[in-house]
Amino acid sequence: MTIDGTDFKINEPTPFDKGWLSHKMNHSGLRYEVGVCIQTGWICWINGPFPCGEYPDVNIFRMSLKGMLDDNERVEVDSGYVDDKVRSKDDYHGIRHWRYEKGQARARHENVNGRFKEWKCMGNVFRHDKRKHKEYFYAVATIVQSEIMHRRGTYQLAQYKIIRNFE
Image (cartoon, rainbow, N blue to C red; front, top):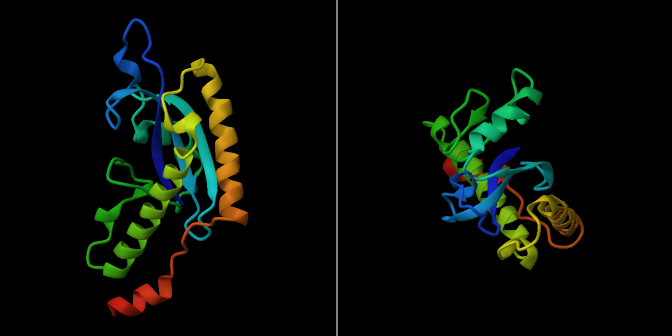
C-alpha cells in the first residue's frame, strides 16, 4: 500500500500553539495517515487525527502501522519518510519501470487525498469542535471509498504496459 499524511485546516487554537501548525498549509490543522492499496486503489488504512505540528508523517507511521507489518513487508511513501519499513522513489536506482510504477501509485494516492477535500467540511476551515473532526473525516472517507468502489474509481496501474515501455 501507499501511505501518506493529509492535513485539514481547523480554527486557530487560543492561545496560539505551534503544536497545531501544519507546514503543508501554514495553518493550524489535524493530520490523518491514509493508506491506499496499490492493486485496487481502495482506501485500506486510516489513522488519526493528530495535531499537525506535533506529529510528522513518519512518527505517526512508527506509532501504529509499522508494528503491524511483517518482517518482509514494506509500504510505498513519499520522500518525507525515513524508516527501514518504507520504500520511496530513491530506493529504485537503475530499475526505471519500478520507479515509474511506484511513482504512479503515489500520484494516485494524492488523487485520493484530494477527494477528501472536495467536501466543504474537509476542504474549508473546520469551525466546529476539534473532537468532532474525526467523525466528519470518517464519514467522508466512507463516502469517498464507496465512490471509488462503485462509481468513480481511481485510475489503475497498468504494470505490464509500463514494463514493456521501458525494456
